[in-house]
Amino acid sequence: MSCSKKFLCLVWGALTRFIYGVGGFNPIVLPISPLIQIVIMERVERLNQHLSDNPVAGVRVGGDLDEIKRRIRSWNEYLHKIVPSRLQRMDIDRPSKEWDNNQFDILVVGFGAAGASAALEAADSGMKVLLVDRFDGGGSTRRSGGVYYAGGGTTAQKDLGIQDTPENMFDYIKQENGGVVDDRTIRDFCFQSPENFRWLENRVGIPFKNQQGERILFETKTSYPPSNVTLYQSGNESAHPYSKNTIPVPRGNRAFGEYLTGNIFFGGFEKSVEDHPNITVKHHCMANKLIMQDENTCTGVSLISLPDWEDLRSIHVMLHEIGSGSPMFDTERTMDLLCKSHEQVMFNKFGITHEIKAPVVLACGGFYFNKEMVEKYAPKYNGLMPLGNLGDDGTGHTMAAEANIALDCMDRCSAWKFINPPLSMVEGVLTNSEGERVGNEDVYGASFADFLVQHHSGKGWLVIDKTIWHEANSDCTNPESGLQQDQQMQGLANLHRNCKQGNSVQELALATGMDVSCLEKTIDKYNHNISLKNDVEFGKDSKFFHRKIEHGPFFAINLNMAGNKYWPTPCMSLGGVKVDGKTGQALSSVNEKVVNGLYAAGRCATGIASNYYVSGFSLADCVFSGRRAGKHASNLKLDH
Image (cartoon, rainbow, N blue to C red):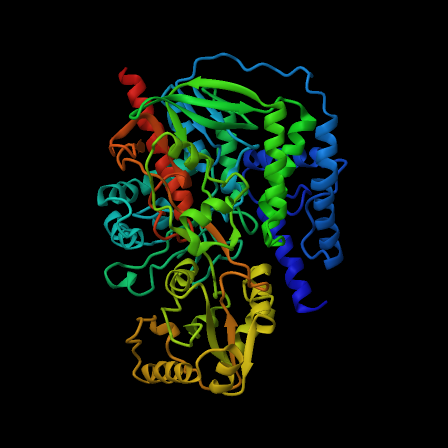
């Protein structure tokens, strides 16, 4: 099979694990706690039941290209024929179980890490919590890599002999945050980090150890570590300028399991929430309007839910799964938009309205799946591949804006271009489309991409020579390299398909359209600074700044953010509802005062991760902001 075909197959396999949390829909034995494994297996069984008569999702890792094409055809047939037919035939008058008219103390919208954290914090304080989710729970948390950013002296760091302090963590995160939130909030995040990590392990039950009770440290720079790893350096800690005033330490805590472990991370929350007597969960229920008493008081929310008909809800589940995964292969975005259109028909035709009066926590995700919002708020990031889930369509942001709630950092998104692994690629030269070096190549992949998006129209190249090419190719083809399968295949796609070649720097410039004189000066300057053993331009770490770009042929890997068929660029939104850093209460756009009875958390809110993202920031911010909102809302209730 050709490299490009293998690449597509393996990325597809990774995608199915990313979407469903496991390899396709077959139950597999995971090295995790029995309780969380049961939760994951139950989800697999539910999906299998939904799919019993529809072959519309999931292929095995390594499936051939014909199988991939067949599945995509099945998706299209499902969306264009099966769903419309079934919705048309459905009896609208069938009975549905009524909601209990219980009085709830707090309403949480969105059942991902942020919403679950808020719900558990409030429920543990004695509050009766209604937790609603538009789909069947998990959101983008379940589809994540399961990496949680925690430091300041966590038990994991101490177990591995790593010294860290909240002050050291603060000095680093303040640089990443760029003043988006105030210093007090960043300090709270850092000083609460060790306790929040203990809470995840002990209260929620997320495994950050292997089955033998060991924590495994990975010391090599990488975008995502091997499956036996539980702790690694997941951000820019060792890169310039971040390392100038801080001590670099690993803080990327990975839920233990096979490859992407967001399903395992969320499994702990799902089990804890479902077992809690004070939490009522309602799936397939969407919030559509905030109930405002005045500009600084929210009294509840209007909801619309689907009836508890298995056939209707199974369609909704599949619309979510297909819509969340299809943008990787459907660059025109026809399938996810059609999924949303069908969903709207379902809610319009069958939806049951509810009005809940209680303090509200908005935790319903980001907005990058909404093309119109991206074009309006973050046009520099337009046209990239949505990362997350179909529910990241700005529903919470829109409700907030309609109620005159302030939004902030809406122009900020996180686009990813990970050149590493293979590690040798970091020794290349990052240029813009003219051939000018534009940044430090050993930064985190989202920071790397941001150089290009913010200042160079999202276009650029990574220039390497024959020596680096062969070393990278060897890493990608060596089964003992420790690279995940999709990392190997992405590397091979870049080296063999997604690049231009020239026997000289001049030929390379001509092949890529870069300015010949500019690229020659760039490479000459880079090599000269290597002779001086000092990257005076961007401060690249000496570990990656010791080998000249001098042995032809030379290669330029295409880093274009949009329209890159061999290397699609995942992207997620970072901005959201503006909140008070101490309480998590939303702020009014009319007077910048807190809105009593309304909170926001996770990617629905502005927070720690709203300027720059590194692996683990978003989940850590979800837990921090979710618990903050749940605690403050509970304390207000208790005080009254």
